[in-house]
View 1: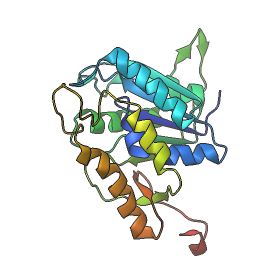
View 2 (view 1 turned 60 degrees about the horizontal axis):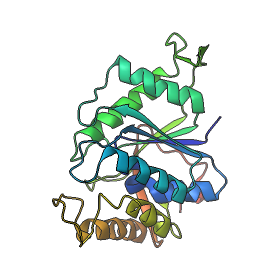
View 3 (view 1 turned 90 degrees about the vertical axis):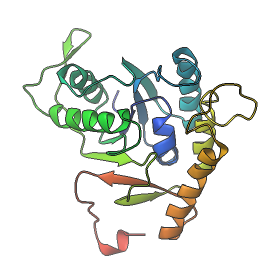
Amino acid sequence: MKLDILAFGAHPDDVELGCGATIAKEISLGKKVGIVDLTRGELGTRGSADLRDKEAANAAAILGVTIRKNLGFADGFFTNDKEHQLEIIKMIRKYQPEIVLCNAIDDRHIDHPKGSNLVSDACFLSGLIKVETEVEGKLQDKWRPKLVYHYMQWKNIEPQFVVDITGFIDVKTKSILAYSSQFYDPNSNEPETPITSKNFIDSINYRAKDLGRLIGVDYAEGFTTERYVAVENLSKLI
């Protein structure tokens, strides 16, 4: 099955938080989008891996993605090595995306930049014919995505481009809140974490509003890129 966009996240909920509205918008435009989670988030303070599996499935249904897979890497301890790269290469070659979205290149959680570098390296290696991978007894063809973009996460890094997500912020928020074990719940008796405050949930909205303000729209999501952003002509810029 070929996808237009494949979004990777170190943990279930990374993709929703970083680029959920962009994904929802692309799907509304007829694009096929998939999500691959590297870990099950088993080290999370709240909830459990089994619960997060269910929450991830619910969030995927809200966004309308075509597929969602979990590679089962060790939360907090996966590394950017051949073993992990090959598993991601298998996903890239299986779904042949034109665009890959992945974690922020620099962030508070150590898994985010690790995941970012891991996926980026795998995207390059996936295009090498002498890197052989096999799925279900069949050798895979090489495939390199045309574009690799990194979404914003905890840190307010300077985006290199932003996407107008006006009309899709509610879908993003709903997909995030599908992870009810992870975010603000005034009735919860579980320990507080940096992402369980109401301010954190509010920050998702006000960051999107501020990025939107800067380009003259209601809401936007920011990304960084590994190559120059090219436009067909000057009039194509918003």
